[in-house]
View 1 (cartoon, rainbow, N blue to C red):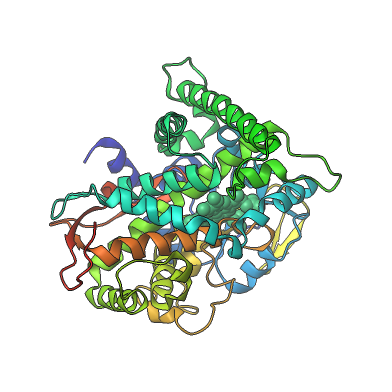
View 2 (view 1 turned 90 degrees about the vertical axis):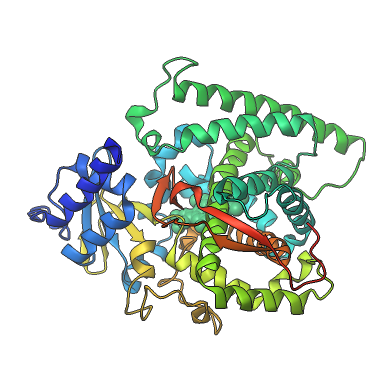
Length: 477
Ligand code: HEM
């Protein structure tokens, strides 16, 4: 074990053993370990850290992080409801996400609050409405088929690398509206390199976001981002010219944003579109890729579930070809995805900074404190989810769960804009893979959870193998 994992293990254990804070500030109990140590636990070992805190202090609990201060973590449905019902005036999510501003830019919907947030969200929501998904399904299927053709059968490879390649191409094609070609290749290389730098959670901390020249990681990231923006501006010009000439009608999200106008009739500035496209890339690419990896992991561990998914696919697509227009009918696959997101929420929690003194879950929260809704702890709350450690997709077959006990996409006025897109993409990608191939656990692999930037991913990128499906006559990879 290298020094960092050893230290993070120590931090998580040390916190569980801690005396508990003295509650002089009237906030719920929490670890007394120094904030720097709590930060290491929270960043590098979030699951053991959260579990240790919950077991020791109950819920709600308070953790303290340097530069952020107190974060009161709630997980019971009543408190979560109070947070999600806020209109955005008493609690600011943009302020809670401000650490992302240097990555995404000051216009990103994720870091805005109040009227500016409402205005920006109004423009971003229409392209992501459920009924628009059909426009993106064919590209999602095509990209997946092209990728799996190169997978070596019966040999171990990292699933996360593959799912990221698929979801990045989906974003480039359907959100950025890029055609296959040199410009798309250049953009892909820049984005892959830039997001790789951001994999290290240290860059979530302001002190490490320093431009120390083009060779330093953060300096390199900033330069790659600028180069990507230059490429995007050229793309915007091309699209505007195309439109003037009355060219092909495009259905990608960029085209809709170029046409969108604020309530006063003004269009979005290029800089605003740059920042929103980058936001969708960061918020939508690794998250969906990670969720796909977690579903694959679960399918390798639950053969009966895998068989039932395969049966459902065979019945829906007897000729072996996945019709993206019909993936919404796959109820069992939908339940498998949802149960996976319950047990492996890709983002462990959401935060809101308190702007006016507020009472949540019976706790008085002063201005400046952060209220966190812990997705992870809520999804493992035995009062909401009996036997929470058991993987059981059937929980999701009858009706919708409450948005306050199950919220992998957050909630209220900040609920994820890309939820319908991500769930649809996951169904198209998984159906396309599972019609042809069978996932098998890599020999000797024991899964753990680690943080990559904002997401919680399987350790080692989820080593996995695939076998060709034998039973079907349509094994066309
Ligand atoms: C499995 C995949 C995904 C997960 C688990 C996920 C999860 C989340 C979560 C937890 C939030 C914060 C919500 C809150 O604060 O209450 C969020 C916000 C957001 N997500 Fe996603 N997301 C996913 C995919 C996507 C995709 C595909 C896109 C777009 C292409 C996207 C775009 C956004 C945006 C723009 C926001 C900010 C909304 C706002 O602040 O108003 N996400 N997402």
